[in-house]
Length: 302
Image (cartoon, rainbow, N blue to C red; front, side, top):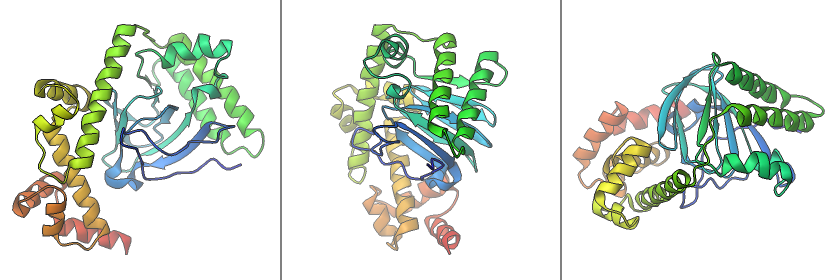
């Protein structure tokens, strides 16, 4: 059975939940050998999923946004992302990031004693992620297990059994050593904040081509403008308007690379009513004019 697959497009629903099924119902585990250079703009965009995720940085440097935190990881380190946590990855250049995802039930059957004692306290807590650094002994052990899981995917026999055994071993390291908080008030506040943030991001994604304001964005989530600003700053390290502008620019870049539409048309369709303003912003963001960007993309595919 072959697990060494990769894809370079994150597809989400209106709530930013990833829609692809990872693994199978009877084997809810999947391994990916990803190169961020193959993704649009070297970025795995904002998404979340019910699966647990483990990422190993084989080479390069990756910037992670997880929950309300942002940090960089270089080759040799790794990270665990808890179930249902909003996250995003980016690398300024090529970065090889083997990663695997699994449902919590892959570690222990849902409803079992093991699940309630060792899985639920983690996935129902306010614990969002765990970084693994080589210089911390228990984290170095976890990284060793992660690398064993990656290597196990090339086994011609007993791959699934070896993977299941190693995932439990990895989970034991996390359970025994990570700082897992289970404070209900913190967990509820975090879930509420993420839900409101997702509503605002969803609104921007669906209406970016129209003339929308900070008032419109905040109103969609039923909060004040100041609360909207605070949520975007806390979780995404930007403002709602800047997020909207960057999203528009990203959509414009995709149209430039994949269609033959005129630049003036693309400008209007992505919410920029003034083409000169659009071109200035585009060059500032991508360090290329829209025409230069299109030519570069066309030449890279030829």
